[in-house]
Every structure is written in structure tokens, then in C-alpha cells.
Length: 346
Image (cartoon, rainbow, N blue to C red; front, top):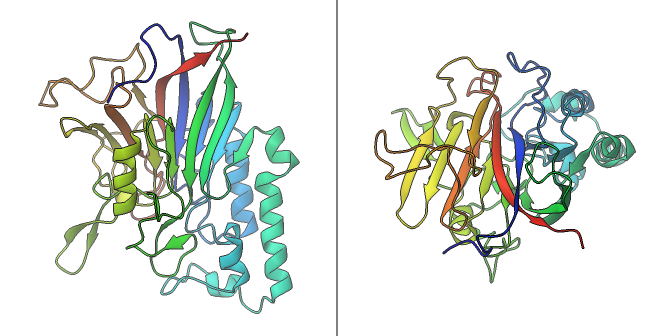
């Protein structure tokens, strides 16, 4: 499978700041203010218990970014953004986090006001003024973006960024935005939210990972590792082959993985266990034409995650969880540079 665009197609290079699982913290080590990029993407878990003050903290953090476009989805912790969940009076099983007190004694009208207030914050006039685009529900968003000033083709046309987004993850302990783990949600003909085939999507943004990709957790008394990602999503991403798939949810899975679909070769950067290799402000990956040497043969010293991405043959996966497994904000954000085709102005 090769790129649908001829070699002569002009491209623009965009820089994208990737965040997830900030859980209302503003204490990003050495990373404030947030680095300037063309786009910011937050892949969910904006809060821990979804109180309005927690949402305000994360809103203020994202609004402070100089990125002119900020794409945001919720996660399983963002209870009040799952209206059906919150209005039903549900709460997670076995997890307190003060949730019992937060929802204690609330009637239907008060819960309804909770939903309306947080929706206005993320989708209202102030959000639009700050460049925040809340990607509600599940589906494809085609976003026209002027060619950035930093691109070699600046001022010439625009790019049409195709983003498919979903906040839903396999059911776990009664949290929000859940579906049965056995459900084939993301593939036709029976999926509730099938992702379009290649080349219909540039970037997939989901709260959780596909199974087998930056999704290992330690579970059980023996300390065995378990792949906690979604099988349906794994099948979908292999079929869709986006340029970039960003997610979080599994804090221990923090890292980057570059997949060569044809050869089954994987190259990883980061520990994959939610621990920093070193203290840095931000981790940078360049998969544009100006990047490094690429994957090579995938062997030691034979390549890396940087280098021009062969769209349709490779995908870059990023687990951007800022929190480690102990809910400490020790993981640096990622900045990815990638190329998109320019739609010329007529």
C-alpha cells in the first residue's frame, strides 16, 4: 500500500504538541509555558473526578498554549462530559477519588447543570476564541489549516487535516465512555463507530490504545504484564494506516512506537513503563521530509522513530500520558513534525 498522492504533490510541515492524561495538573515539569506548535492535541482524561474546578485548570493550561488550533477529546475520568453517564447518577466502582462526595445528594436537575456548565466551558465562545476545538462524540473531522509560516510553502493554499476521534475505551470498573471489551466497535459492517479505510484518515485520536501497542500494565499478584488495549481498535488501525495515532489512558505505556505494516517491524522510543529515561522539557519526533534516516531494517543501530514517514506503509503511535502510574506528572509532552499535502488555492 503506497501513498495516494503523486511524488510531485506539494506538502507543508506541521508541528503538533501531544498531551494526554493530564488529570487537571498544571505542574508539567519544566514545560511551562507549553512549547509553540501549529497544533495541540489532548487525548483525554482532562480531569481526575470531573469537577468543574478541575476542568477549569486544564482549560487554562491548554488556553495558555500559543498553538492556534487545539484539538481536545475527553477520557473515562471526564464523567460530566459523558452526559448519559452523569445524568444516570453512575460512578466508578471501587474508586473513591472523592467521587462519592462530589455526587452525593445530587438530583437530576443539578446533574443536568453540571453537564451544561462543562459543555459550555469546552464548546462555548471562550473556547473558540482560544482556538480550542472539542471533538465531540466519535467520527471524522476534516479541518482546513492555512499553510504554517514556518513551512517552506508558507502562504500557498492550505492543508485539510483529516482527524478521526473517539473518547471511548473498553469498560473498566464503571468509568465513563465505555463499551464492552468484546465489541468490534471500530470496524464495518457491525461497528458503532467504524473508522474510514485508508487513505481516509491522517490522524487517529483515541483515549485508549490499540491492543499490543504501548498498552502493557502490571496486573495480578504475580506481577504479570497484560495488554490492556482494544482488539477492535488494533484491527482498525492496521486497516486505516493513519500517519499518526495518539492516545493515553495506560500511563505505564508512555512512549512512541513506529510500525512498518508490511514487514511487521517495530521501533520504539521511551521506556513504555511510564518512567522517564531522562528529565527533558519535551520529546521531539520528526517524521517529515526533513527528519532522520527512518526505520532502516529495524535492527539495533539500523534506524529509529525519526525520518520521513511512508504513509500507507508506516504509522507512528504515541502514548502521550503525562502522568505515570502513580499519578505523578513526570512524563514529558511529545512534539511531532509531519507533512501533509497542500490543497492549492484556485
